[in-house]
Amino acid sequence: MTQRKLRVIHCGTGTIGEHGLRAVIAHPDLELVGLLANSEEKLGRDAGELVGGDATGVVATDDVNQLLGTSADCLSYFATTTGRENDAADQIAAFLRSGTNVSTVAFSGLVDPPSMNPILLAKLQDAALGGGASLFNSGIEPGFVTTQFPISVLSICSDIEAVVTSEYFNYGKYPDPRLIRDAMGFGMPADYVGGMFIPGGPLSYDTLWGAAVRWLTRQLGAEPERLKLERSVWLADKDFEMAAGPVAAGTVGALRFQIQSIVDGKPLVVAEHVNFGCEAAAPDWQRPQLGDNGVYRVVVRANPDLDVQMAFAGRHSGSIGGRLACANHIVNAIPAVCAAAPGVVTVTELDHYHGRAAERG
Image (cartoon, rainbow, N blue to C red; front, top):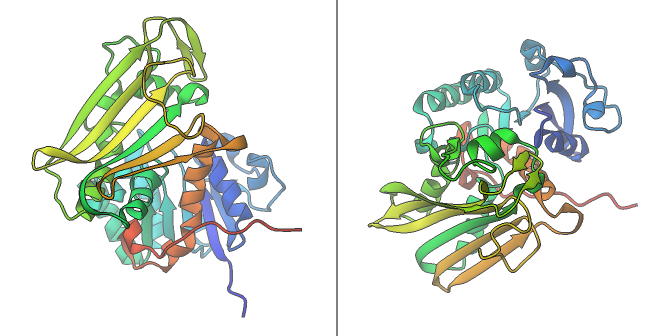
């Protein structure tokens, strides 16, 4: 007997969400049955048209009640939540209460529920338990690189003294000024402190990565005492252009930072970023051995010591690889999320999941 396809509603067609929508449409085990739009210009347009593909017969709507009536199995939620956290939580909660599971990139804190805003967590947890639905949140980094990737590597280790997950990325082609300039500080004066480095904000280091490093610390059997931030910048020696805006000589052209989970006074788990505005930026900073852009790395001090690197390659080198990976990670999780117990779930509570083979013909 052929297993029925899981019915999916999708929300979000932005930088990552468009790849998520394509992944839902293409997935052999999923059927797109609804598209929730939060912007007026997308209303009434076919999902396929919005991502440059063939018509699907599914048109975008902002009528949540209509979508709740589709008896969907899962909502793949990629809508932007920054500045609209309460609205996003309300949207997600409505689907959870109706019995629709949710796989999302919306709230980094859900990677480690104790790290999540307690009011939003209670709203989402109550809705999920009330509807008998599951809610899973991840991404690429934070997400896969700070959860499944190191956990898989650590399965061959003992006596673990330290774990460092790193991202090496050239953000020159990343078209998001809100993230690149305002939050990270590219193109800004050396003394500018972006929102990423001010605790408590929606794009701050503790909001984005705090949950991930605390989660991994707890997986190692320890309890994080506190988070520590270390940050340094490289100032551009000449003007250059990024997709997010110009970088003038003397302003930030590269930055590196670490979010450290401190246990017994020393870092046990570290999430590190080494980010460049162009290929020529920060020539004296360490580059990874693998790949030319878009490299993730796990370094472990344990028995045995390990240095494992993963790069986006070929036609998917760079930021496009990261966006695809993030989208696929959430969409591929949908069958496991639908099979999970009700409530907010983390990756350790899901069955193993992965992509499917391409069609051959």
